[in-house]
Image 1 (cartoon, rainbow, N blue to C red):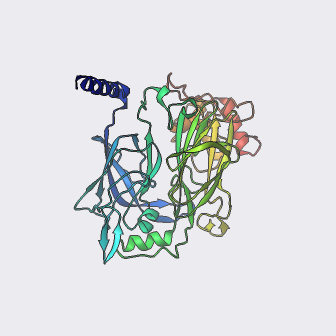
Image 2 (image 1 turned 90 degrees about the vertical axis):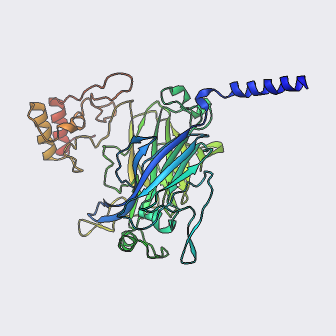
Length: 431
């Protein structure tokens, strides 16, 4: 009996020291607000949507701004994730939340004799907290579980990133995608969410939020990457930025109801996981088959500076059918990925300091005023005017750098920048 007690004590001590304090599971608390909003499309249409806004994380206030997709949620493997959903009074339909691929206890709700939700539903009068214990590592979609055929296309979805239990944001040596092995170690990461938008469905549901609506005849017109349709930009000159010589982790998620074949021809991917599960072996590909609801994790390690498209390879998708009144819309599901030196932006779209999507005389005038020290409304875009020096293969890298370990190198606009952008506006510059 004494030996048994000693054995049990030794086993308990071994288990205690086998799991360091840094790996202990935690409880992560998010509060989201579901509310109506609108998004503008490249053909000028304004489409009603529903989306999530980040109210707070662990008591720290968020921006509380409705976005489509919703804010990226983050946790570690083994954690318990609590998400409280508040419904804005302007949204009269009940909303719930589920995460396919994570454990949860279903609580179906019914309406009119039919199941309307997989989970208990939140309303403007009664928020609901959804709990997911023992999180699995990987990339996942979170989405409304209430009439999902309607509410997900309306915009109630987002990405959940679950990192390994030993992940520490201050210790790069712990930045593993899945397991603590060298081939799982990454330096940077980016989330890419693709989806579609049917303005007719959204208008009908927005007008009558609680009326049953069939999506059998739904015909999406807009095809989105991170909530934007080409030629809209995501706020920078490059939609997705990778860094050469670094391990870049791409989390690719399809929040749409349709399947897509996403192509990144100039940037080979090393596919490592699907739907939160490691693949039996790494697969090198420039094309990813994204079934509806599927997620992929891929490692990318570019060797040279490049700027390449990310697009739906069927090429038949257009944004809004017409643009500018009569011209067929360009692009469909199209974005751009740039591979640049660490901390730099070498996009060939630099020079568009006025942000109107083109480089013309207005940009030349703005850059000239910057060079002369005359205040301009575009002074905040000085980094876009800093195009010199060009890289060896002609990309406008400039002098401006954003580094994590040292102070940023400020943008400087000189006469060379003015002349290069003048040549670009005149159609004479190769970059």
